[in-house]
Length: 305
Image (cartoon, rainbow, N blue to C red):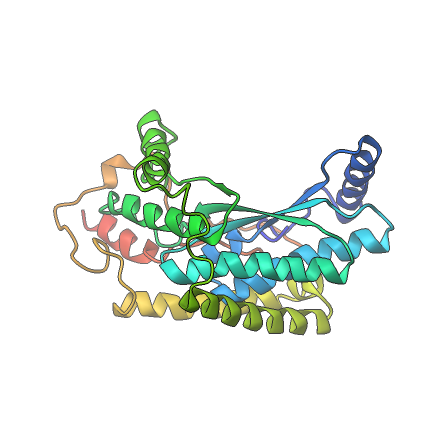
């Protein structure tokens, strides 16, 4: 709903489907899994504290609903997280997420496994000088490993403008294989544990996110704030601040707002539309829209080719 602005079918039908899935898993003694897409918040410009708080509140909304309806609580909750380029902070973000969810689970007196699925952010990816995207995704995958992600899906360097292709997918897989086979990241998963700097960052992010989470719950909960547009407004405010840093050059994306290759041409290579698509339609709530920092600048460069 956050992404489209509408229920998949309707409020009643979607809740009925959730109930059916929960009861089926209980009967079959299977895995009961729910998923929260935190990547949407990051890719839309939310800061790290907001990402953590909104993800936690989103997951808590599921638990509240299930408990009120006397339905089985999930055995696993999956958080799909977008990982940005702020290396150490992203490690701390994932560690804080796991701690926050475990703390919330204890309140419900349930042990609910937290499965973190990490994927590189789209927000800092660029159309021009696209090979730099490989450096960005490699760094982001490193943060994901050290942050304790359970599953990592890499993003192909050309995913913005090119259809799925064998070469791009192979490069994305090889980046992960290089981290494993040549950098031994499979043996250094816990390398970040106990380091003063990262533990301090983790605690700071967790404390600030927990405070924001409590404010959301005191104001009626995640669903109420989404319906009223409060969360959408806060994300847009954060995104605007980040965009201003990019536009002023304080936040640098190499090859895009600094050290541009004037001979770089992309107009003839666009197999996918790389910008936000807008269309007028009725929605129940204001959708949260993903957008990249470089979009406005890239449109100007394309027009000038």
